[in-house]
Length: 447
Image 1 (cartoon, rainbow, N blue to C red):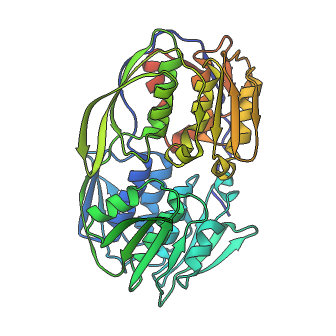
Image 2 (tube, one colour):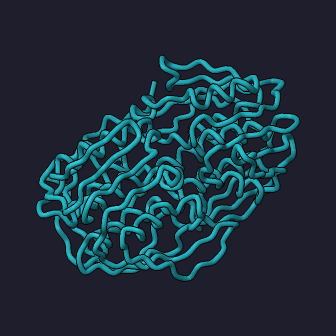
Image 3 (spheres, helix red, strand yellow):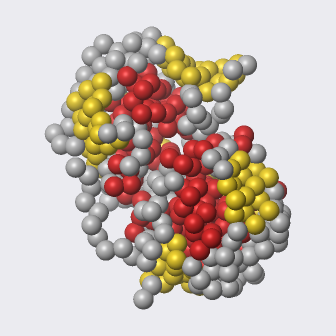
């Protein structure tokens, strides 16, 4: 059983543009939106959320929290309100929880549910059903949770929450904010102290936001990495949250402006959490004219505006240590690299093999289809710069970031670039086409 996505594909074409202009806002941060709904669901009282990303992935999380007994609804004023049920208050849903395309949604929800005595089935679309869940079921099983999964630890999956959960100390085998978060959320309703040891730092939205909700959580830097410890069975308190713009979504107009001659844009209200700014740092290293303006604090996160102008980029080596801070941005960085002078080498990319698609293979195939030479290994990619010819058809594999990245490429290519299906862009950036065309891009349905 999985989501029904038997709609006709929606191919889009992107053509050469000149001079993108404007002040824009991208959708609210996806990572924070998922977490705001989930933490609100297990807090005491009513949590209000402004700026929530109203895309399919996040809406599916809101529906799941409602099905688990915490009512999450959008008011006519555009503000979302979540009626929390407390850390032990979730109940078995009446029907399967459909997470659509969202790995973050399903993996974090599994953690949240795993230490409450409930039974829930989790399903998703064809893309999500192809992605491995073992990285989360293995640590969660240590709490006493049991799982029945499809072959290969995949969805559909039935979770039976632990009646008497035991605290766990878990060392992350790969850098993954999703796995870290799932274990910490399991610790919320577990007596005693649950600790995650993180050898390589990853996005820390979970730790920051849990602290804001009143969780007893500490982060210690030690020789073997960050030790993140949460004391279980303390209630969380409802919060009023403002969600800043998503840096992963800002990546697309930012790269578009850098590679499209004559461009000058401002992207307002972007989250500048240091665990998320790897792409900005890399593009500046490549010679990108990106100025951070109006920096301020909002909801425990640093935010600011990005002023971006067309730039002559040069190839660089992006170290593996930077990968966790920009793991979703490598497809669009590869597009930027194809317009830089020289070779750009990206290291530490093994995580991309298990995203919505094998993102590394999909990026290489898309670049090759548009006249760009690459070389790769299991965890690295080299892109030859000098400009993309375009003219190719990109197979997106139902991956929203692949679709958006190659539509950006077409804006600066000699010939139009076509993506086979743009429907999945709605999972993270519903108005992508409208926002880009509003700045002067040329994205149109393929005939």
